Length: 353
Picture 1 (cartoon, rainbow, N blue to C red):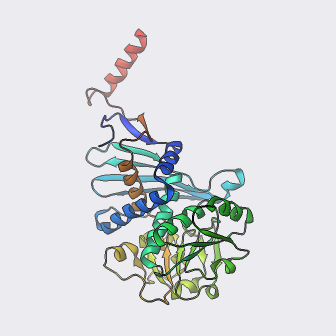
Picture 2: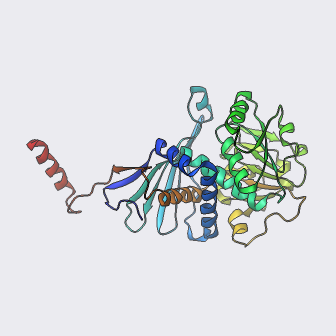
Picture 3: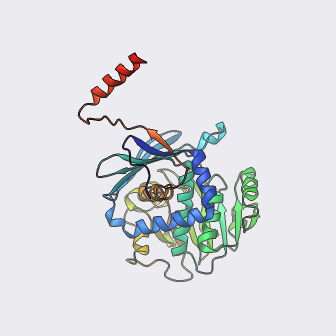
């Protein structure tokens, strides 16, 4: 079964329909399925066009385009990052995305991606933890309890079987929100007074703070051996969360080095500091965790292939459902060489009416 094939109509997934779809599938199941789709695409990484995101930075935020293609489909995401937005009651991150058919250039899907990005970011973190975290990990800590926190907790619960999440945020209201949202979802949830308390006993540590600044959320003496860190918040130039000394002693895994060296935690390191691309681990071309005492770090900045995977998953999930609308956004004259004639016929029809 496929979506409508009329060239003039493009399936569009609104925020409302995205939420309906997520609730229909179930958040955890959807993130598991997204992680599998992302993993499948990471296995065929060499097939994709790859470029760092195109970013327009300002003093208060960033607007970015994230494009890629596998030769059959082309996808891009528009996304912003404005940490001060929350003071105005606005989202820090908003996004939408498009998937197109390479053979014709015609769009085949337009979708909101604010909710979808939260799902795919958490799915990617959980996928990385599945490959890199200690096998017996049962406790995770989340430092930064904003919009991404619940997704991270539930994705890693679903893929890595954690049963306890420990939370800390300098904004105690954010932690209270996260505790309430995770209630009854199969996790023991512990609100902590400090970051040090939160990481106590955790084998998986996720940092996902929003402030656009060089920050030290984790100092070197806070991080013992045998843990995995998902560093999610450091995702643009001038924004980091980890002390440099943690990076020096960690095994570092990244998405796309030319982008991560500019935007990720490793912007603190020399440009030739060795890192491993996560796709190589998944494809069996490089080792992941090498011993139980190792500190592994997934320096996650978000890459276009993950958004492509999310759009591809969404496109496959829609047929047979009513979780989309059809948009008339592509001019489709009877004679493709007579675009002006389409205007003339519309003019004539308007006069008759």
